[in-house]
Image (cartoon, one colour):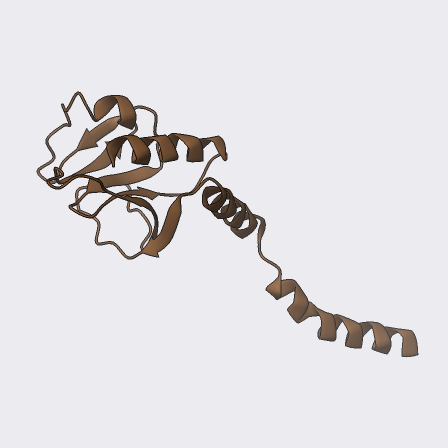
Length: 145
């Protein structure tokens, strides 16, 4: 009887430690973020208001990978991935920019948005996939910055 009481007390004391351990999903995201930092990508969680017409509601906040832009008059644009490989602007017009499409074709299906403003280029990603996807993201940000 004493053994069961001691075991019960140990279980009650040690059970909160299991809650502190990150899940497999969280560990995978942390590993991707560390790899992104290692190759020089800047990342932050950014709250977003997604368009109502997207077929799948992306998370908010969403992981934003970004890079500063060069030049004195960079072009500003935003494209959302409506479905894998189909990129549309805010008016739901399909992207036909020959400069952007080859880069967009290298991105995975869980990249939700790519936008460029005067200061930076940003990519919003669901952070699912292999670390090799980070190389595609890094090359896109570098090429379009």
